[in-house]
Length: 286
Image 1 (cartoon, rainbow, N blue to C red):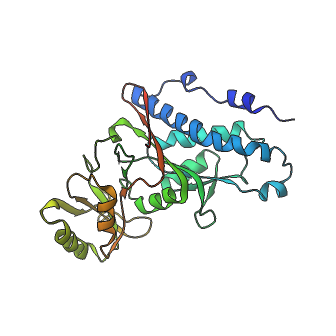
Image 2: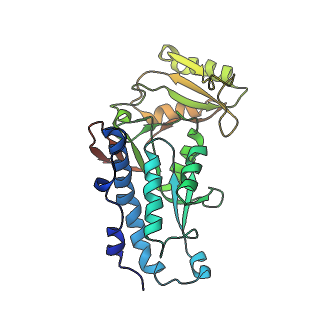
């Protein structure tokens, strides 16, 4: 006999009952992630439970369509993965490694998935995601983003666009009035193309191109950053970005650019920001 859904929900940890972290901002980042997961993943799960409660064997579970969740990177997403791991543990009568699959955007998020006892999958096997959670380097009022500070922008965009819904979880420093407010635009470029790409950028943007540099690796490793796809990253500054889709399309037309760190809002329905005073702000896409 299964516990009722209500009794299972009541077993989830209340954020207010947790020990304080190192700062009010860190507490707020955790609260933002828990809130995002509770408000967007839990309803998906609860809608599945009437069907899944009738299943009893591995063969029956393996025949159902799993919930596939994208897990990104960043200091706030750490807590989203933590909450998802707890939800799986509490709802273990319904959730298992057959019907909850997590797809990573890179090395860090792979570790987040595995460290929270979640099953790791790939886009090759699971090309359609129910939902994806990721951070952002910047997020504007329309929920367009700049991503790529961790050099995973191609995989991050693949995961985000494979999801029916995309949710941003971040701290309030990432909320900006327009993109490229304080962050350059990362672009992933094939290794023999940076010079050609820079010439094309100068033709297209002229004097608006204020900076264009190949991102260097860590001090202990000489040379450029190498992405998971064995390309390099260039960071460019063309000034304020108000029309995200237009600039993204201009960049994508340059041969040699594999992907950009501009994320025009296609499917982002909400952003959750942890504020430095310990509060959480939620912005819904209008």
